[in-house]
Length: 401
Image (cartoon, rainbow, N blue to C red; front, side, top):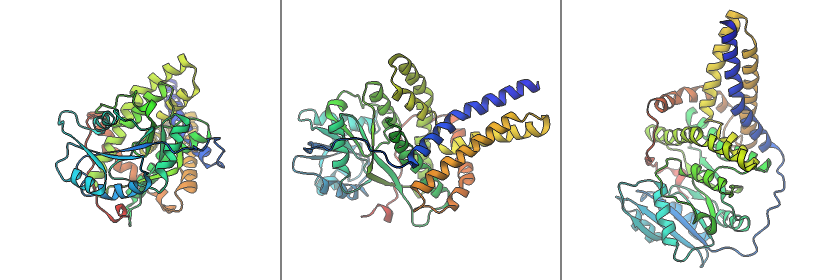
């Protein structure tokens, strides 16, 4: 019985070593001096079409468009897809200077369907590059040109750095959420770039060569359509390039219900994609012998940070009890080592990329953040979210120019 229990705990520890080890490698690679990518500057700016899918965004879309329009030239277009809107989104966008197309289809809802509608609109006179920006984001000056030129020269999808702005007085949960978001959307993609590997798309601040994007079917209600799209493009031979210099920012929801809704959609979608797509990527890696497929499969194996901490903590408690009661010390030693790797990864990520925004005490709030997320993961076990649900917006000062 003791041997079986020891074998089981060692197996759990080795299983957790995969995502923890991947996270550790990515975070440490991101902390190294930036390597030269060898990417060529584009001599001629491509013709750009910016697509902004919007569902009931009248209250904040004007702010987003004011960050995009000054970056466009006479050959560029800004198209807002007013998708199943019940407010004045279309009117506000037209008054701001955007071309507006309206879509009404209550049976097929979600960002994927809206973008498919926008791409069909562009098909009669396609641009060189299509850029996708969410209707609640702020685009840093020069970001549109940076990601578009990189997409044009590389003929690959490009992802800008997409981060969340910090509320004036963030709660401990909000501060840790911002740190986790930074690790996921900046630190890990940058670490993969340092290792000469592609990254995943993160939903906004994305640029695609028309020759690539028109081959893809967007019409899907997938709740993490950006993640699925990056995997489909990777398998087709178009891995995503990360452009850390281009910045897009969004606002962390301040309403508790809105924050829970947003995190539920993101994390349930991530877990569903992990279970369904990692075997697909591993199979393709074996047949195609492309290391980038294995790299992204391993990257996908890293669950949301709070869930990873939760699983490690539960395993450590079980191993600790077993060590004290039965003298089985190997699982405890393995999990202690993994805890050190996990702590090192998060600390290095904070020190390099978030120290200027989040105080060190933020790390002490991680246990509270994990406890806050427990119901979210129990909900995944009972009934995973599969339908797209719009996150309610907060019109806060952080969204103003």
